Every structure is written in structure tokens, then in C-alpha cells.
Picture (tube, rainbow, N blue to C red):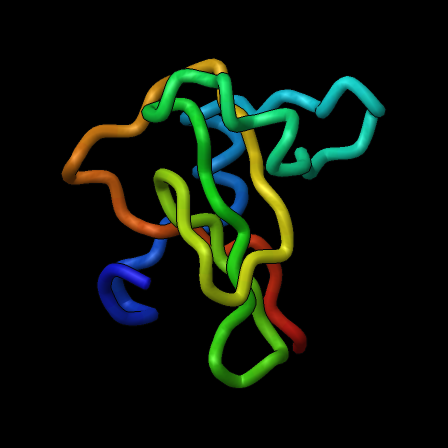
Length: 89
């Protein structure tokens, strides 16, 4: 994950800025088979946090702690930070 908790994008900001798309199945997360042909800068990997009680959307393709993928209408850039996907209260 890039940056610490103080440098994460909120889920609301992520949704508003990058506009995630539902997978063809209607699910918010996409499978590897569904994203592998997508433009790299529109794919985010949902990864679980080290604590197991949070998940983050990280720009690009990753292979560790992967829960699934998200495709967005707006591309990320090299300066884009990770986003909170969910956190346990």
C-alpha cells in the first residue's frame, strides 16, 4: 500500500473522482479474467490490510492479499494514492 492512513483517499472521494463501474455480473468487484484486458490505468486492486479488518483500493494490478479488482471510468496517475475500500469500525 502506498502511503500511510493519513494519505489515503476516502471511499466517497474515490467513488466521486474515479467513478467505479460494476462488473459484467453486476458485482462491484471484478475477477482477474474480467480485468486482464482492461486499460491498466483504469484498474485498481482491492487488497486486504495487514490487520485483516480493512481493505484498500490500490491503483494497478497487484498479487498479494487480493480480494478482487475495480475498474473505473476515470484513470489514475502515478501520483494517485490508495483509497479506503472498507474499514471495520
